[in-house]
Every structure is written in C-alpha cells, then in structure tokens.
Figure 1 (spheres, rainbow, N blue to C red):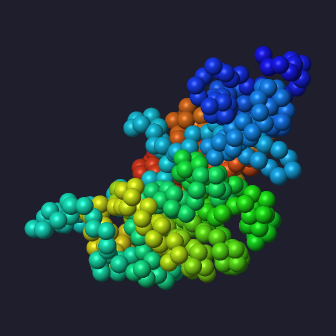
Figure 2 (cartoon, rainbow, N blue to C red):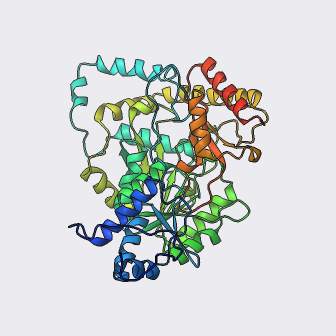
Figure 3 (cartoon, rainbow, N blue to C red):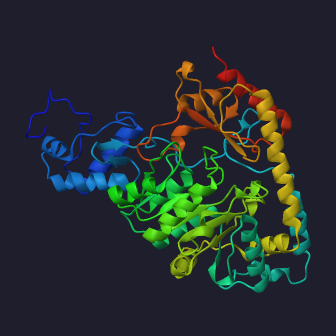
Length: 464
C-alpha cells in the first residue's frame, strides 16, 4: 500500500504494480493499464486521474507516470484531449485487424471486403499463359531493384485512372497497401510522432502506427466536413506531423470527399509542408473519380493505389506515387524491410494493365457493386446507411430505440450466422463511437447467401 492513503478517495484507476519486478517501473505501469483494459477493469472513454494525483497515490516520481502515459499513447491505448485530460481510447479494447472467419457453411461473410474470385478468373487464365512461357524461370528470381519500361508504363497508366499525373522517378511498388502504409510511416515518422486522420478509419493504419510508436489523432469536423481549421487545430494542439486520408469511400463510413474539401486540404498541406498519405483503395469503383488530393499537392501528397479490391487481392501489389522529397526515404525503407512485390506478380500486373485486360475486370467489378447496392436497397429499405451505388461497403446505423451498442450487434449477428464489423474497430483515439456497423457488400460471393445475410440484417434492425 502506498505511503499516502487513498482508501476512500475516488479515483477512476487504482493500479496495482509489482515493485519487485526487474522491468522498468514505467513499462510495468503501462502493461498494467493494458491488462486492466483488456480484462474490463478500465473501459474505453474512462478519464484517468491527473498524472500528479496518480504519482501521489503510487508514491512514485511524476516523470515515471509521464513516461508510462506517453508509452500508452504510442500504443494507442490513451488519448490526451487539450483542456480535458487523458482518456482510455475508444478503440483500446477492440481487435485491430479485420480478420476473415474460419471456413464454415454456417457463417455468411459480410465483414472483410473480399472481391469475387469468379472475376479473377481472367487474371488466373493469364497467369497460366505466363507460366507456359520458356523463360518463365526468370520470374522466380528476386525482383530487381529498378523497374523496366513496361512496368513504368503500367504504373503511369494505373495512376492515370485516378486522374493523377506521375513520372518514372516518382513510382514505387509494394507488396500490398498495408505494407505500403507501414513503409511510409517507418520512413517519414519517428516513435512519439503524431499523425491525424478521420474519427473512424482503416484499422490497418492504427495497427501499423501503433507498432512503430506513432500516435493517431482524430480530426475535428465542421458541419460534417474536414476543413483547414480542422487540420490547423491538430497541428497546433497536438504537434501533428502528417495526415492520412481516404477521400473516396472512407473506410468504414463510405463518405465521398467533395472537390472543394480536397482542394482546401491540399492548400493547407502545401502551406505547412507536411506529408499526406492518400489511400485510394476504393477510388476505381467510380468510373470517373474526382481528382485525388495529391493531384493538387504533388510535392507533399503520397498516394497509394492498391490492386486488392479492384483487380485481385492475390497479387499483393500496391503502387505508390512518392514526391521527390520523400522518394529516397520510402524507397530505402521498402527494400530494407523486404516488402517489395515478387517479380511474378509485377509481371502479371504489368501485362494485365498494358494489354487492356484490367479495363474489362474493372467494369465487371463496378457492375457487381452496383447490383449489390441495388439488392441492399430492395431488401433493407428502412435501414439508415451511407449510400452510394459505387461503394462496396455500407455503414449501417443501429436504431436508437434498440439500445444496442455496436460490439453487441456484431456479436449477436455472428450468433445468427452473419459476420459484420462493429464501429469500435474503426474509431480513432477518444472519438465518440458511432452506433453503427460496417457491412461488406462484395465478400459473400453467392447471391443467395448475400440475400440471406441482408435478410438477417433487416430482421435484426427491425423495431422489436
């Protein structure tokens, strides 16, 4: 028991730590906080005692508390709010990665976003042709460090689909967008740095940032939009060093950023000379997408264009547009941590794009998403969701009268044979948890099973 008596003093957290451990005290305290969250003794959103008060309670130096809190912030467990204090992050107890359920006929998959493999047959058939070529063995070697003219041509054409003009000296390939995000963060930021994004975002960003000791901060909004004032607030109050955005169908909210907002963000980025990571994973589901933010700030916008949703997840390929000022750092990091794509996948992508086969695949993907959205609207007409006929996901709001929180909804729907993902998985920092679930429209490849999944959602959301 500490020297100071707090037996009857109200405190939201009274940690018990092992003072005989060889582990540094601040690390023990941080580990205790993590365990208390995972075991339910500390709930998301809880305001922690002031650092000085906690130091008095534990009878330890204030700097130890400060170091422990800093470590917990880097792990994504805590979020400091200027003028209000330190809180347990809203997503501290949520599972980070969006995993696919084990194969079973009992679960309808509408959680992870998985493209239809029937469309990928075009890619598979082309791969078979490549394997039959006499010099195929060359593609089983390590991928070269430099790119050839055909690869560069395919990459430039790929970015042209988005409306971004790029050149051979600004292109890099990565083994998927998740690895691209990790490499960019590792190259441009340091442990303890902060980046900002929307209040709900792709969990893979948070996983990558947490593993590198980088804290993710939520952006405030005005009338539901990000503004230059939003960006200035986090830079001024949190010393944010960069930004991450998904302007086309934000994951999970499905929001489509308008042109004025893109221009306003780009203008601020240029003014402050801060890097922007622009994730364009869903942009090509739109036949004529709006110009990317990076097109307005090519010197600071780092754009990721992944093949996983629109072409084939098995390629494990992402293309990165990198401005001159960041190119060497990102390139060196990609090669040093060995997340460059295999030569075979590079060749398959290059031929698919350069010979026009991708155009057919893209049209099939777009048509499928439009049809899936139409079915959703027919079967679940009364459910309030994000809605765009080209978006492969829906952000569905749980009716207030049910009193159900998102994590309960995910669990209960799973018990009914349907996998979806709750809002807690996506929320950033201490943001309010939206009463919503994310529904993938393209993961359940059987139309019969997809309709059954929609019927489960409809019946679950109906007033009881």
